[in-house]
Amino acid sequence: MPRGLRRDLYAAGAALLLVTAAVLTGRHIQGTSHTLFVDWAPLLASWGPHPGPGTPAAVLLAVAVVAYGPGLAARLPWRALLPVAWSTATAWICSLALIDGWHRGIAARLTTPHEYLQVIDRFHDIPAALRDFTGHILLGSPDNWPAHIAGHPPGATLTFVLLDRIGLRGGGWAGVWCITVGATACVAVLVTIRALAGEALARRAAPFLVLAPAAVWMGTSADAYFTAVAAWSVASLALAVTGRPLWWAGASGVLFGLTCYLSYGLTLVALIAAAVLVLGRDGVRARPVLLVPLLAGLAVVPTAFTLAGFDWWEAYRLLVTRYHQGVGGIRPYGYWVWANLACTVLITGLATAAGLRRTGAALLRHRGDAASLRAADARLALLVSAALLALLVADLSGMSKAETERIWLPFALWLLPACAFLTGPRAWLAGQAVLALLLNHLLRTGW
Image (cartoon, rainbow, N blue to C red; front, side, top):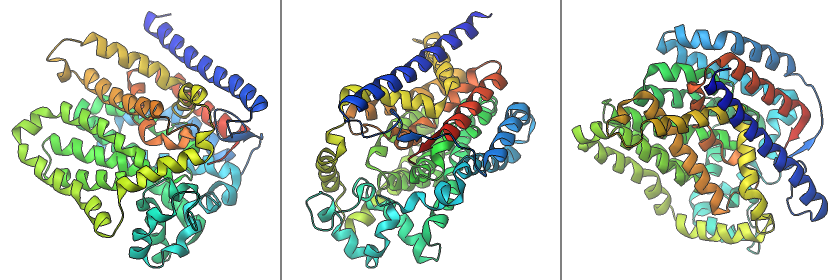
């Protein structure tokens, strides 16, 4: 067995041991002190083996992508590859969601008591709702917001309010929105990789982005939608710094501003954006004027919300208090600070663990070399490492104790391209598909 493959298997084995430790330790803690508030730690899920209407499609799609995905990704014209990747990712997310049936798998996900659709009627006067938003965050406040509304800036809720206003009402339309938009995130990552590290690596990463185990939680969590917005903000910036028209910089700023008003924690996407600026520094130096539309775009969404009466910083301060008022103040940091990483293994797969080992090797191989960032593998490794850093900062903050299988989707998506470094992609892809199918068939996930 080649040394590289052996080390890849060691990395995958270590990731599997981490998940096993998190499951066993979590069962013990929940069984004795009941402080985890999840039934199948480290995931918010319960044991419940079940097939469903989506099972045949999910299995057939997985087999097809494993068998033909790498070859098609290598041969298709680039302009054809992107829509094929999006449509396949959409089909994969939908088929996994439909294992639980249309109602539970898609239509009812965003209608539960803690979800956004519960407060649509409280936004009949949007300006007034924004002005009063912070007054309902704390648990002791009158008519306090449900958990997800209180836990996010109002941009998240407004999305579903506006869908309702244009006639796309109810959980079904909301679920379709999250799946359809969320699936475009893989296209954004491919565009970014091609712009910064070359088309060859983007093509190698494509099947892994399409067949990600994360798809289990992208149908139909609102975090899938957040993931896409954040990913396109990065992709737009990558296009801007590599010579595309300046309006891409403005689009990046607008989208990043929106990202920050969808989820407080997604401000950490700035670390990935910083890596893009480092990789595209030659373009920035050649056209420093691109910073003007970038900063102008960045100001658009915060200015609009501030003028409407919403104070982002005050809301975040109150959210921290609300977080500790609820189960977030009870869940043990000492368990979740490492069990969250086990969740990341489950949403990115063992192939990504092996790919991250190769990512580290690529960085070490080029360390201390000023010209190293001209090498495609080093450039991709830096991008992936920036996403890993953002995820680790989120972990250490203590504001993501549990439920990170959905909360960290915007960061986890950028770890998957590490799989482009792997040899024997079909075997690793098969492992990714089997993991996703097992998770969705053996567990009843909370999202």
